[in-house]
Length: 85
Image (tube, rainbow, N blue to C red):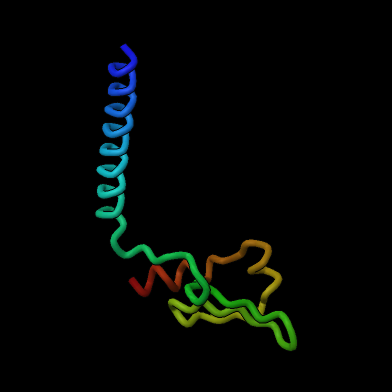
């Protein structure tokens, strides 16, 4: 009985791992162009001193109204990205 219980636990773990790997493969196929989150892969850069500027690095769109961007007004950047693609 102990061997059977141990064998079932091992089998369940292997089946679970198999389905997890399949799910990871499916997710990787759906998102092939997704970058890693690391230093240097930012979308926007914010300069608040000595001058104010926010620059979208994908579209090269810039604005000096940093407070509005920090408050969530990013429509200008969204429009530039959509027009680019």
